[in-house]
Image (cartoon, rainbow, N blue to C red; front, side, top):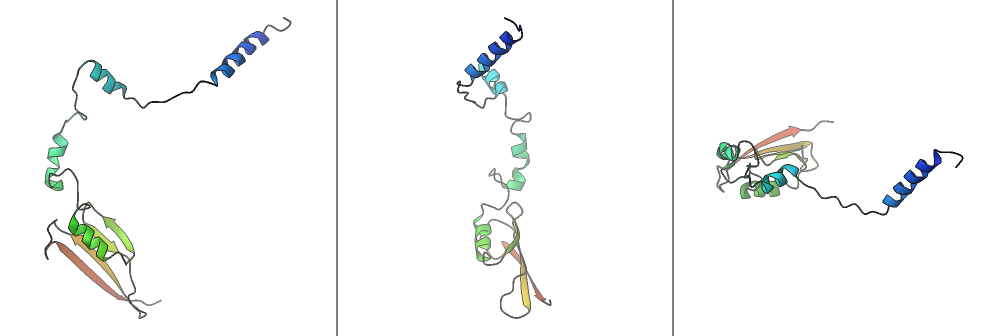
Length: 137
C-alpha cells in the first residue's frame, strides 16, 4: 500500500457503518436500588424514612394529600365562579381569586376572593370577600 494511514481509516469506517444497524433499547434503571435488592437490603426511600409524612400530617389532615384541592367544598366554590376569569387558584391554601368582572353594561365591576377554611359543607367553611369598583377608563 502506498499510504499506511488509509488502512486504519478504512477499518474504523467499516466498524462505524456496521454498528449503525444495531437497535439500542434504553431501559431506565436505578443502580442503587438494584444493588440493594441483590444484597437483600431494605433501605427506605429517604434518609428519614416516613418521618416527613408524620411531621406534616397536621397540615394535610393525615390523608397524604396536602390542601383543599380534592375537597368537595373547594370544587363547589370553584364551579360557582367559573363564569368569571380567575386570577389565581391555589388548592393547597384553598384560595380562589378572580379578576375584575363587569356584570352588566354599567361602569361597575366586581372581584371575589374566596377562601375555603375547612373540608366541611356548612356556612362557616367558606370566607368570601366581594370588592366593588366603579370602573373609569
